Amino acid sequence: MNAQAKITWAEKFPELGTGPIPVEPCVSPEFYAREIDKVFKRSWLKVARVEEIAKPGDFKVKKLAFADTSVILVRGKDGTVRGFHNTCSHRGNKVIVETGDETFGSSRAAVMTCRFHGWVYDAKGDLLAVPEEDKFHACFVKGENGLTPVLTDVWEGFVFIKLQDDDGVGLTDFLGGLGRHLSGFPYDQMTQCFSYYTELNCNWKVAHDAFAEAYHVATIHAGSFPNVFSSGLQNVELFGPHRTSAVCLSMDNEPTPVAKLANSLAGASLVAQRGASMLPPTVNPDRRDDFSFELSVAFPNLLLHVSEGIWFTHQFWPLAHNRTRWEGKYYVRAPQTNSQRWAIEFAQVLQRNAWLEDTATMEDTQTALESGAKSVMHLQDDEVLIRHGYHAIEQYMAAR
Amino acid sequence: MTVHFPKSFETLEAFAADWALPTQNARQGKRIRSTTGELRAFYNAVLPLLPEIMAYIDRFPLGEIPAEAKPLYHMALSLAEVAPHVELYGGDPKVPHSFDEHRFVAEHGELVN
Image 1 (tube, helix red, strand yellow):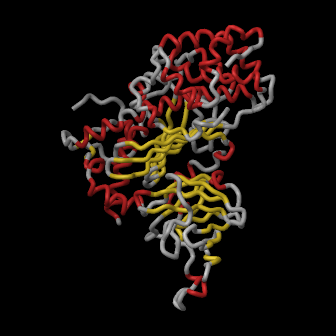
Image 2 (cartoon, chains in turn brown, orange):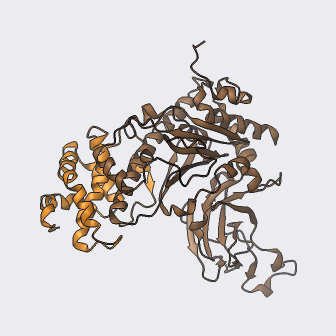
């Protein structure tokens, strides 16, 4: 047994235990199939920001490969965002032709027309027009053949969907304490978005876990963020299946020449943060001056981080037990000047490089886990968010 | 491409053909294809003039940099791309110990700045 340093989180959250974590959830196709059914199809999942479909008639189609479907998110003339399966009521063609995992479009009349035979739906999903309608048989009722709705709701400008609603838990109740914790942050003021995606040959939890601790910073980010962040977490809170913590700066880091100039022009880098003026009172409640960003996990697959003048997300979409689509988005305030635009570029490419460092381990981890050489993994106290993640999944898998 | 910079930036004209690139993808690709020596030469040439370049581009409103000043602005953006490699990665043209950059898709990567 090791001589223990200060153990904080195991004492605060004794229900999580301290034992090793089985690797089976990351490598087993059978576990994956049950996880899709019991976790992903029955949880609220973030699929868009309201700014992506800002005007009536704007729509986004999001492919949900794990559920073999795509969801149309469309803003109606009444301003409401609704979700529908992208499946025509006629013979099941896709109503909107998709060009990738995310497809965007707009209809001034706020209608969607299937290319196959020209069936027309409005933004409430109602079937408006069927060419040669009089040739259909009496059993066909236009009013009963709208698009198949998908439960859709909006929290703080984030559009969520839920594919199966056996428990009747709405989005506000699902997010619970985490939703309250992160409400009131001015997400919509950070209008400049830098967005990346890739496909990773690893389980979605391997990808999630690599981002959900600060223990790796001293090694993995020795390049991009040397001596910048503390390795531990602060202010860890658990909210049902969701979790949050603060990541802090080490405060003895001297910025490089270009970083110094960029920091003086625009606060677009995590490395330059001080103060807490736009943060909700629940985030960094003690207003510690080394606070860098809040690292929060909206169960199951969204990491949401808020900081002064910045917010960013990582999202992990399962494609198979060992394949994941990762999406990383970094939002900052729009620049006011050309030099601020330059400073944002510097901060953002450095952040991209850090994400390239983060993603570098994931496929090796998956391959090594699939070797079967190890049946468990060991977590230290400051990896408590990962421990809680497996705990939450276990509870979801057992309860339903 | 022949460019003529304002007098105080004349020393940078020689770099314009390689580094005055209008999209982030182009700047990233150029950085990956460069040698350590090329990265250092570009960095060392631009860094001393960077505060003056910032002051120069701020003479124009956001997004209204005239065509003749664009190459200088794009070179400054290239310096933002190159700086971590000189300042943090020991001159390595790639991000050390990183995921394959070609597999990382930037949805904003082809936007002309």
